[in-house]
Each structure stands twice: as C-alpha cells, then as structure tokens.
Image (cartoon, rainbow over the protein chains, first blue to last red):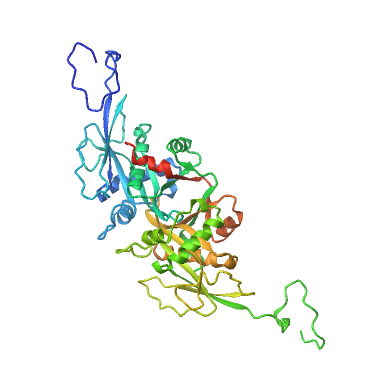
Length: 241
Length: 238
C-alpha cells in the first residue's frame, strides 16, 4: 500500500491489512458482494436447478422429481399467497462484483430486509455455471445458493420454531462463510419473531457440515431417527373405521 | 360338539366357536372419536402435554402454559384454516356412541371407531380429563402435526410433532388410530409424506411404525439450535 504509484481509493470495509507490511507484489483482494433476500416466483428456475444440484450432492438425485411448475405451484401459490414466514419460505443468496443497493427502509419490522455482506477473497471465484445462474435481477448478479425453511412447533416450549429443509451453496462459493450466512439469516429471523428453535437434519457422513453446525452451537442428536410414510403407504388402513 | 356329557374344560389352545362356554364374558364396547382440537380443549391439552413430558422424562424442558398454548395453537383474530399450520387432533372415548357425523367434503369430518375390549378400562383420571363436550366423554390422547415441505417431491407433507395416548388407553390400537387419521388426511390432500422422529433404542415403537409401512431413515441426524446458542444469532453480523 506504500508504493510510489498513485493508489486507487480503498474499497469500503477493507480494514484488516496493515499498510506497512504488504509487499508491493501482493494481489489486490477481490471484493465480492453478497445479498440474501426473500425469493419470488421469478426465482423458481434457479431454485429448481439448485434443488437438483443438492439432490446430486446428497446422492439422492433419483428421488428428486420436482419440476419448475410443481415448485411454483407449491412455493408461490396464487391467488392467496401466505404472509412471509407463515408457510414455506425461500431465501436466495446472490453474489456480485458490484455492491448491491442498500435495502429500502421497511415499515413492517417483521418482514425480512435483504441482508448484505462484503467478502474479500484472495482469488476471484471461477464459476463455470455463471451464465446458467445469472440472477433474474440482471447485471452481474449470480445466484449462489438458497435456504428453504418453514414453521414448526415445539410443544414443550409452546412456541413456534423454524425447520430448515434445504441449505445449499453452489460449489464455487463454498468455504467462504455463505452457509453460515444463510443459517444466520434463518436463525436471526427466528429470534426476531420470538421463536424457540431452528432444526434441520444432516446426513451422518457429511462430516464437514456436522463440524460446521457444531461450531455454531448446534446440538446433533445421535439417537433420533426420522420415520417416513410415503405415497401409497399413506393410506394405512384405507379408513380408520 | 353334540355330546350329552358336559364338554371338557377348554385347553390353552384356541377354543372352537361351537363350544364357547355359556359363561363367556360379553365384550365391552368403547366408542372413540378423533376430531379437530379447539381453543376449548387447551386445558386438557396442557395436561396431556405435561403427562407426555413426564413419560419422556423431559419435564425440565416443559414451560408451556395454557395461555401460551392457546396463543400459539389457536391464534386470533385470524386463525389459519385447518391443516395449513399447527393442527391438533383430540382423541375422545365414551361408553356411549358418538352422534354420527355428516360427511362434509369441505370440512374435516370426525373419525369414529368402536373398540371391543375384553375388560372395561380403569381410568383413575377420568374426571380430570372429562371432555369439554360433556357427558361421559373423556379425552384419551392427542396428535399434534403441521405441514412440512419436500423439495425433492415439490409437495407438502405432514410432520407429526407429538402423539400421546394416556396410560389406561395404551396397547388397544388408539395410537394407530391417531396415526391413521393423520396419514389419511395427508393422502386426501395429495400430500407426499408423513414424517416424525423415533429414538433409535425404542424397538417397540420402531416395530409399530414399520408394521404401518413406515421406513426408518438410517442416515439422517436431527440438528437443533435453541436456547443461548440460538439467541446468539440475534447479535451476530452475517
């Protein structure tokens, strides 16, 4: 930073590098601006692709039969869409080389304002699927991940909570804290609404995820198992009569 | 069969119907009904949930009050339509038949079933759990469930948070009746799955669930952020 040549003004938030120790040949940090916002029906094509990528990661692609149409119909029902956070909710994570505009002031404090964060990366991410995931917002904004969650109920607390059904960050954007950012968005919303817990499930072989969850204070239960009744088995006895 | 002499005393093996002794006891009918819970059921529901907490040895985690249950399960002035949010089915029993319920496709019709018991049930808490409906109707259990979502199916489902049958009424098929009610409602609504949690050492429960056609998912682990760990997210910058 002490070179003779004129220096561009430092980007905001760049405060961690002591000026007198950085060699002249050190690369400039690459800022990446991130935003988490509520999804809309226009995000469905990206959500659909992300769900399929998540299914592939979990080795469950054969179970994934969601289509854009079925996602749109169930996540963004019309004509009476439920209020945010009362039914199935999706937060979209977008990234951009340019800053996002600051969020408009929200009159209703229970609604979620978009969350913004700036990262400074040593290397610019190589994203070979950038074009596929270009945000419907336009510009250089790219969809990097999502979280889908819905209310659950804790009887002993007599309080609602959130259940996170899916949390996914695309491969080029992993290991930068985006997973934590998405969980923080959900957990922060839970606390804001006076909710009692946030729950989800993890595959027992996903040691990276388990370690990450434990670091943020999550309890991982070793003795609880999910039970599932599916499809034709739902009609257990035909009738209770 | 048609012997002049009195028939021999029954052996431990099954008794053929044609030689049932005249002294066979009459079966005891017990009429059961599952209906949607209402705010008037909250006092009974609160007691049931506390009994469940005692049974699970989790009373230290129990902080629900009648007021907090009423406020969160039966919010006012705009209660959500049944099955779109947290839903309670109440199980009631009576020595007398329940009135038949008109089948209304636009509303949930209570489910009726008659149980034939060998012995009448001794229920020492009968008066505490007398139904708000009145008469000789007693609350015997409940199930609490809510919609969940499967992204792989792009379909809602139901998640059963609690299912509880009071001790005098166990081992008679009431638990299965409550499960069936939730599963049938899911099927009726075109939902994809019904899910819940079991402890891996609860072999009796696992056997019961598998008999109903449920599959235990061996690879998934439940994660929970609560208490101070959750509160910490109020102050974190992302």
